[in-house]
Length: 317
Image (cartoon, rainbow, N blue to C red):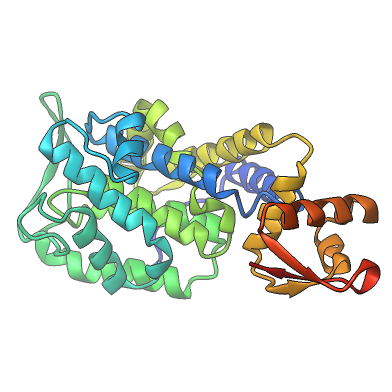
């Protein structure tokens, strides 16, 4: 059964805006970011997602843990970060349409934090804000078939990936399949669904914006609960994605330097190539600029060359 939602004018406008920005990201060679920027964004993603759940570690402390340095902090908080690092380091090993993969991710994310990580809950749960119960999750006996239906929707429905990622996020939060870790799993799995089509989402830290607008995040979840469909939540999440892409483009709205172009080209994985191959990727540079770039790559010991001038062939080291 397809999850209920309506395509609103706001949703259509946001999808158009996001599609334009993704096109601009691809055109500006930002869909494969530099290793340094990817590391920074991974740190922001982990920090923001866990901060929403009450984790107290700073970005600096998370950076230290990634660099295998000792950190002084609450044991639980350190363990949460270490688990998240492991998961985000291996994002491409998870299949967003596989329930088995979903459970494995939860097992790694919540390892040693709860009694049965990677297993659906076997008891009733509710979400309490202050003295009010804001959400009563479906009974535990219904979780198995509800999650199977949700993964079937992911696999077979013709909805746009942008829509499906938001719908899955909301529906998973509504089902609340785990005793703990539902929020971070919802955000992680939305990232994975988006990543299946758009490489830029690998470490685009849209969770930072969720962290900054937590009240709106929970309000969108709550309002969608009350209306019986996820349209409000879809609008909220698309706004977050749109703004995150805008910030990425603003941050990178500059002329690429030679090292930026070289690093980008290396990440494409072309083991052997010519200057013409290089210029086919960077269509707006001259042959002289391409030659200077490739000379810089040789000087930095990133490339080797055989032959000269137009017959030169370059190899990645």
